[in-house]
Image (cartoon, helix red, strand yellow):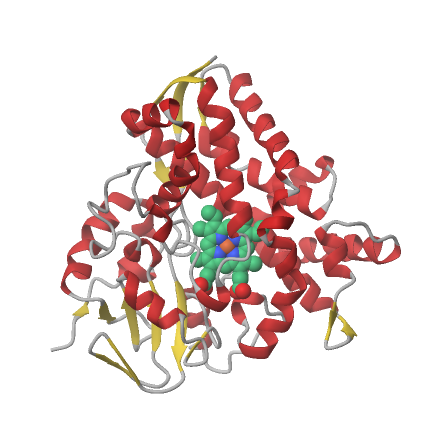
Length: 407
Ligand code: HEM
């Protein structure tokens, strides 16, 4: 008998991700029994959830066999099931495969390598200081997710693009509705936000073509693909993926980190005593939170994965939060331990060809914030229940009330 579960909601619906403790309690026994389970009654079957670390890597290592097109998320998989579904005209990196993906990834890849990111360290430290000043201005209690974590990564992205702080409110409202805009059942508001975002980046790209600078907006605007100037939609796709993939993910990691530290005072003490643990703690935070909940691949031919026959055309759903709690890789995986010896083996950033473009930036943002905050943070505790965002794609704390004392 092949392992299947009828409790498919936990992977494909958004609501279960609002309660990560209950989610892990439901998924852990499934993972302990099998690396791969078939999901029924999802509306997108045949679909297999890949729950263990080794098997997620096995899929990600074979991008020709397991492709990102035609649908790389649950909501896209639902969209392509609609009869006469018209493929969207614009694709971002995560929707591309093969040569097309490589050509577009190469435009931005170098800009995000560790050497390039290092030169942003001062600018990011400045943004982190601003975020800590916001905490100070709140006078000892705030909703950390809304008041701090939502803002800082977006300010960093604005720094990358070289756009002015006065555009912050506009950018925030646009990025916050954009995830919804990618949903086939999106509202007019979300579609309007998409158009607003397009217009914003059109003006920016035109400006950077007329007067290039050394920012990311200029790099994208003036890029070439196969010797031709990058087309308008492809450039927009790059602006869009950086702005969306770089925002909620890092906000979730930052807020999830605060939730973890407030709930584990001994671990916070360990970081106070030994700040050299911070790079490792950053990975432990990202492992523990696993902000990206899944990506989907489609099998291009029959393949056996952990004894399960995956047929050509089947979908596989890579469950990063489950793989990051795989007891075959991590001892006591549900514990939050800043000195965990193999925290950096997590695969919250994926793996292989689509490995997160912003991995070094995301780590730097989280590390820099806590590096500057912890010496000032005399005390922190939860001031009410932490509410996680109900999203099956990217989620972390949406409301995190805390009380704290800053030196
Ligand atoms: C803690 C924060 C973050 C997490 C957990 C995260 C996670 C991920 C994951 C799981 C993927 C898919 C990998 C795969 O399919 O194997 C991905 C792709 C991507 N991420 Fe991140 N990400 C984070 C931050 C960022 C930041 C800060 C940026 C940019 C500013 C960024 C840009 C991207 C892009 C452009 C892709 C698509 C890459 C491709 O398809 O080639 N991410 N990320």
